[in-house]
Image (cartoon, rainbow, N blue to C red; front, side):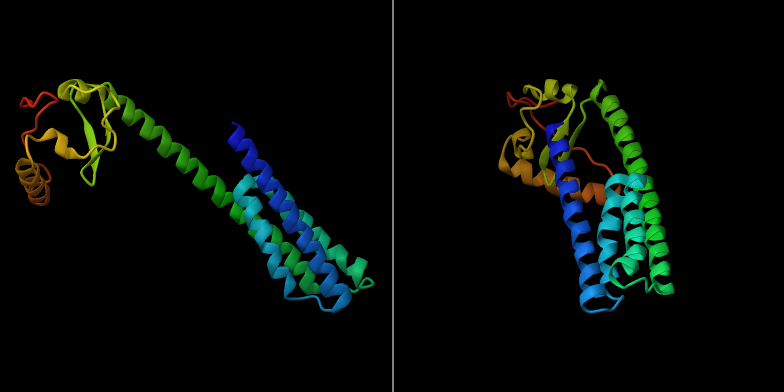
Length: 202
């Protein structure tokens, strides 16, 4: 919870810096250089970040910059406004809205995937059959039934090489060849493994 709060503060701080930079750029280009283009491209950085971070609430940044751009004509250019500035202001809101909607959609999909992952993991955990997952021949996950079969304490083998389940190096290498060849041909294969006490797992 503290980590999340710290990240939120960092985001707010960064956004404040970006908005301040936008204001400085507006003053510099409008009042010093007396031109009104180019610099507004930088405005899209805080607009998109805010929409990605805070979804629809982040549209407040797009609205702020849109209003600020229009009023900056009166603040720094003696009321000389252009149609381009009004168009840019509308684009700020449009881009922010699209980014916010996409961010919300992605967040919902991620939430659904996490929910499915939890349900599948719960089913596999409660399974009476030993289930395990190896990545690059290192154990990434296994249920309690699997640990009971091999005689190890639950969770103690995470990251362990698959070699511990074979009687010797030759059997380990042979199993690797059979597994890769078998899965390529039929999608499944069988190999003999041993438990903690070097007994064959039936």
